[in-house]
Length: 94
Image 1 (cartoon, rainbow, N blue to C red):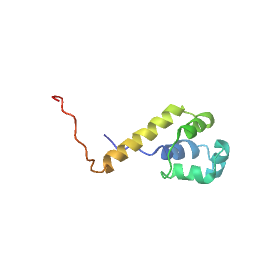
Image 2 (cartoon, rainbow, N blue to C red):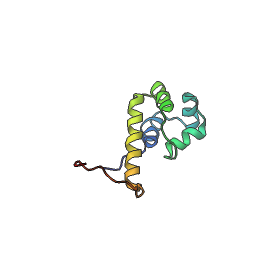
Image 3 (spheres, rainbow, N blue to C red):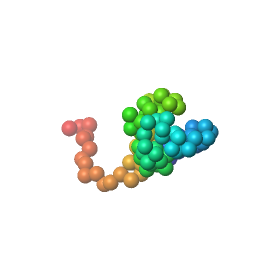
Image 4 (cartoon, helix red, strand yellow):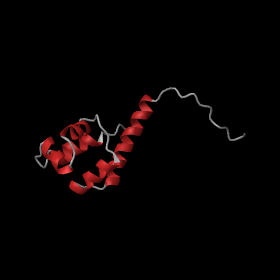
């Protein structure tokens, strides 16, 4: 599996920059604080279901697309940094 980019990077590079919006302007359109949006586009915040709906309504694509990007990023990160789980797999011959 490849290293997916954070959805905030896509938001910044593919949507906000081409529209020549500042972070503050984009935050106003989304109805969130500049700080909240800044965290997302800098890869320090997550796309929540609520934010995904805001993004869909203001910029598109669908909320599901934004959430899929976030989940792919989170899962890849977890696989790279997963702690040693103290688990015992179930055997098929129990």
